[in-house]
Length: 68
Image (tube, rainbow, N blue to C red; front, side):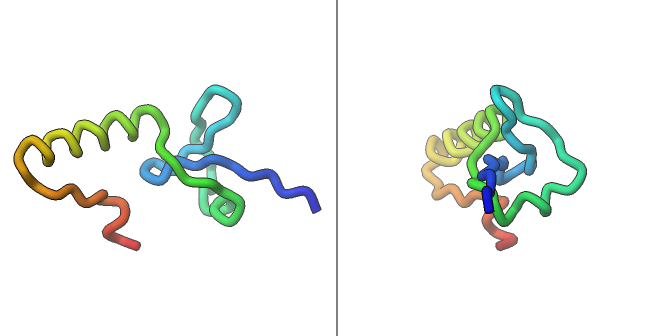
C-alpha cells in the first residue's frame, strides 16, 4: 500500500500542496498520514506571540497544545 504523507498546519489544519497551503473539506481524514508543522501565516503569528511573551519575561505555551 502506498501512503502519501501530507504536511498539515497544527493550528489552521490546512494542507501543504506543492508550494501552497490549501483548505480541505475534511482535515481529519488526513490526520493519520500527516506530519504537522506550521503554515507561513500561523508560524508568523506564533513567533510574534512568543516574542511578546519572551520580552515580557513570561513562559510561552502554545494555545493549540492546551486542548490535547
